[in-house]
Image (cartoon, rainbow, N blue to C red; front, side, top):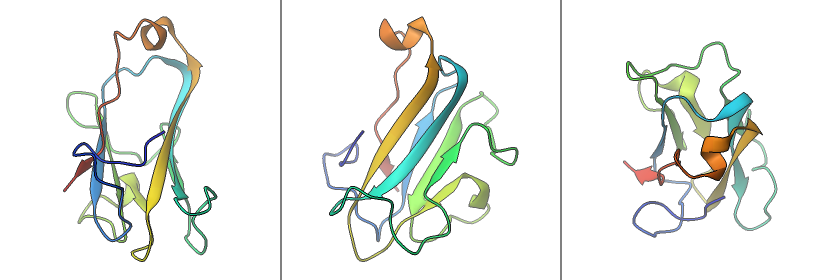
Length: 118
């Protein structure tokens, strides 16, 4: 779980961010990224959805096998299927879950990078 970006700044619902999930995440089931309201730690109200997962059939994968997940008040052009909406008038936090984790997660040979502000 994180409340800050790669620069240590709080995640701002008015800004756009990217999380690059490296190729071959160590899971036997799936992974997901979910956004929560920083003030309440609950799902952000009045949004169409609050997460994206590797189960989505329309999730776009990069040529190297990584996946870019975007967070912000609107989807970057052409990135709708990999976007999680936020509200511009608040801060948010992100919880990344790995279902059916494999040893590479525990021995730290696979690591999730920080979320980058775009």
